[in-house]
Length: 390
Ligand SMILES: [Zn+2]
Image (cartoon, rainbow, N blue to C red; front, side, top):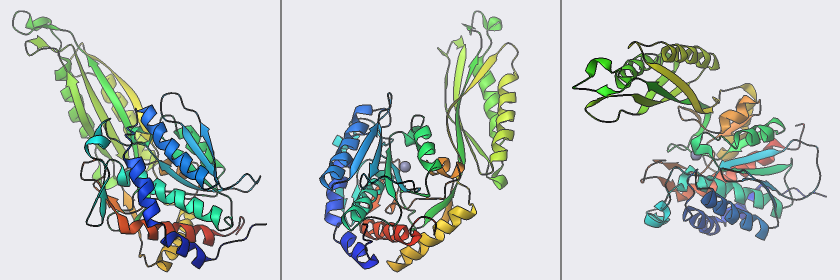
């Protein structure tokens, strides 16, 4: 029979774990795991699997072909029909192979550095310790599982169905993206669509044969201007063509050009309106004779405040207060996997990981002192959610 851990036993056990947390964090930060580096992402996964095995938890790999495998974690093998609470996180980073060797895990003045240290290997580490704490201290009031994904930084092309499947039958999701520098968590996020447009023109010698040419670069310039004009800051709709390339030579009329478009929005209705306008811009040409195509390369759903998620946040907020943290919910323009879990109707709270900043840059840092209290806050929130049906 399950013996529930008292809150003070839970916080006391976690309070002693900072050195062990740092040691696991050091190991996983020092393994390169860029999203496209399947071997590296799987090596980070193997390190977590070892950790769970050492502590008697059960893991299951869901094989994925192109990207790292998804890893499911359970406290024990007791069968249950109750909906679990899910501790979620991704182990891929935005950094190229070799970054961990050049810039290994280091600690300086209370901060830890290294690729992915805050986004979000530290979040996975506290998830691992919270899962372990419940396993060691007699189980959790409602079933508790972990999900470690592999491709969030590129829009979760392979893990999205895995995440949605888990969330559809879950009671709540805690996504351990890094806490804001203020310590706040994220209760709302924008949705995002990441697209590539390609324009075809006709090549010609820019000196000898100019009239025959149709400039794809000339056309994409018009399209970029038109797409940027769709930005509506008051509505939270933004458009950014963040990458362009095209042409063959300075003395050739450009036969092709490509641009990568980033659309962010808050209201799902705006997504469809803006997408229709973009498709119209792609289909019509200012420079006659050009053609263009649009391809969606990745997409995140928005995390919008909804009553079930708000209730989850208030449980978390009061649990955090218990361990001395004053936490508010913040809105973020950044996208994350929490949008997928919220979109399928699962109460979700995001950025409950340890506090960090400067993600996706070499200055990325983690506030070491936040690891234990953030783990304690999460554990107490899980306890206070209580048994299923409460
Ligand atoms: Zn992240």
